[in-house]
Image (cartoon, rainbow, N blue to C red; front, side, top):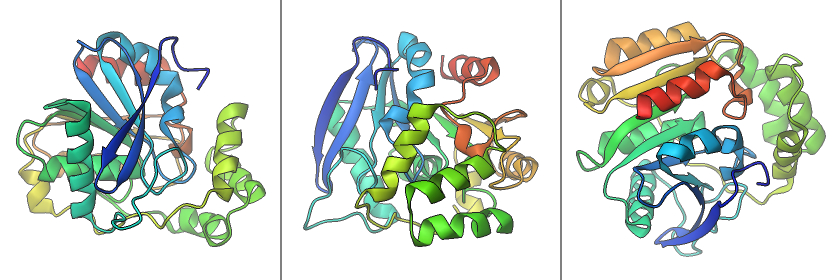
Length: 268
């Protein structure tokens, strides 16, 4: 978190599903932007490479997912179990933040949550939607990716997490602090994440929210060209691009100029 801009704040927002930890920066009077991390060991800290630039024009709220590694806590009597629960949780979170309409973004699993929320939210609540290499939204996983991830999923250890991330990122040097955070997540008592089918094609065709989809061209999770083509065929107001030198798990902490420029141009 020391890599976040000076003046960042931490907030705890109560919801029916537990207390949600949020890292915030930027002017309180600026348009809000809510960011959801990917699964595994990702937390609000994972947006550090984008926070300073995005926080210049927005009130940025980066979220620790309930039930995942991080500082959010799960309500003992009402754990998240369905997509409807995720929608209710995000509604309660936005209400607690005093946000009536917002930009919403997510990476990987966080993008899956963000897309499902945008499809179910009150019209106008999501002003713009950012999907960073979204998983299980438009296509499935590659078989090789699942095979390499299996040992880590069955029995996560720091060594297995590191080996998997080094394979997926193609041996590119990784930020040591970010990698340590991912390894620490292996020992976190996390709950099984809410999963489900990909959004229905008819629902996607009816989404009028402007969407920016950035795919990881060097990723091994899925076929980026197939993801962008499917999104273009289904979403009426989508802008897509493939970032050629970025892998799936290097997002969003990888900060090529193209990624940062596209985010800020779209959101403003």
